[in-house]
Image 1: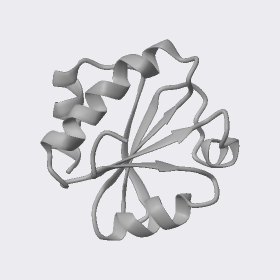
Image 2 (image 1 turned 45 degrees about the horizontal axis):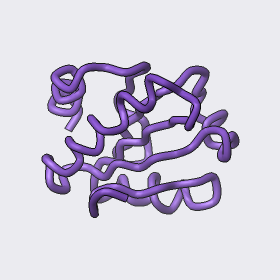
Image 3 (image 1 turned 90 degrees about the vertical axis):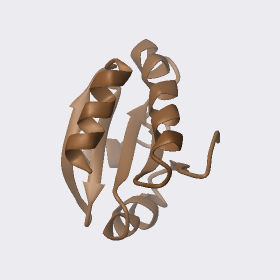
Length: 111
């Protein structure tokens, strides 16, 4: 874990750490897998922005290989899949790796 604005989540703690937490602060969930090339490109961008935004959102990472239940529940068909939760609901999302400028714009429009 690179910073205090990042958490690892799984099928068991997802509701507590993402859904419940999103009532207080937006939670951005990165659905990823270790074998996914675009995921490894996107990961450091998300981590950098989580740190830079200093608590405007929490970055939650969910490994879809180990946690297929929540990935299925939220319709994740391809990865990386990034979804922002506010008040327990997905309010915005994007698929695939994007350049930092595009991720920043997505965050600014969603927060």
